[in-house]
Amino acid sequence: MAVRRLLLTPKIPSISAFRSISHPARVLRCTIKCVSMAATAAEAPSRKVRVAAAQMTSTNDLNENFITCSRLVKEAVAAGAQLLCFPENFSFMGLRPRESVSIAESLDGPIMQRYCSLARESNIWLSLGGFQEKGPDEEHLCNTHILVDNSGTIVNTYRKMHLFDVDVPGSMLYKESHFTTPGKEIVVADSPFGRLGVTVCYDLRFPELYQELRFQLHAQVMLVPAAFTKITGEAHWEILLRARAIETQCYVIAAAQAGRHTEKRESYGDTLIIDPWGTVIGRLPDRLSTGICVADIDFSLIDSVRTRMPLSQHRKPPGYWKPAA
Image (cartoon, rainbow, N blue to C red; front, side, top):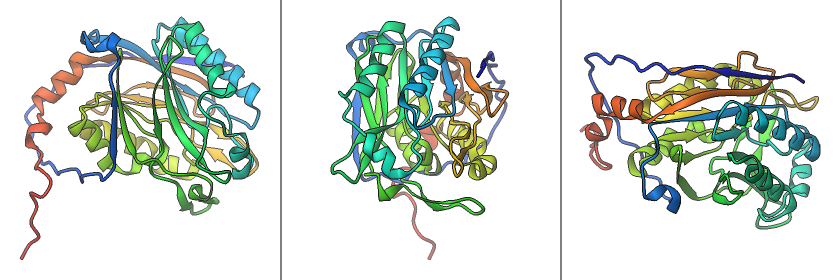
């Protein structure tokens, strides 16, 4: 399958007079995990850095998926990207839930170590969203988003918190909780691409998570690897992503699965990179293609948007609201 790539240059918006109406994020009762690497702690990241997001149609063939990922890494490196974000289930898309559980392994196992070697050999950071990590028992796995730096070292991990237990109208019944153990930690990581808020797919529908990542943990870029269903993707995918970007004033990188994986499962492919003003600055033009889109993270734009519209100052603290008499 031909690999397609698209580069769009972000435009800094002209922000005119505005009225700010803000709402507090609900306080999340969970553990917060934050990591800062020594390489980036001593100095601020450069004002612009190039990133890429991948789109693919994963199967239940581990080797076939790795070959596809390797090809996309080469494309990203050739485009000058320093970070490539893969979608949920990038390494494996099982025909049945039990199949995914059966191949799940620890992060030091051969599947993940192969991707760590790919990052090291290609000198690129990888966002590996939705890996089937071995769970607490034989019946469950963890849907884990893994950040790997360009030395092949696992920097941080986030285990998907919100599980997709939904009867999609006109589609099939999904019960992710039947075979997945939810995570309880919110994750941010400092990197050469700014402070990353790490999430997975269905998390996108819960804005309080993103509010916490932005206003309490100071994220600058939100990572959203996903395998949205065709029906829900058509209705809500871009709207939700742009809303998360606008309300948090963060870049959003959303790598998507695309097309038909099995007779019963089809993903809505629309890989996007969105700036803090809510503008789509990177997009694969073909929703069914395998390829990458590329864009620049511009830290001066983040500063500009947040300075001109200071939401962090206008937000009301938890407990501010009082019910009407």
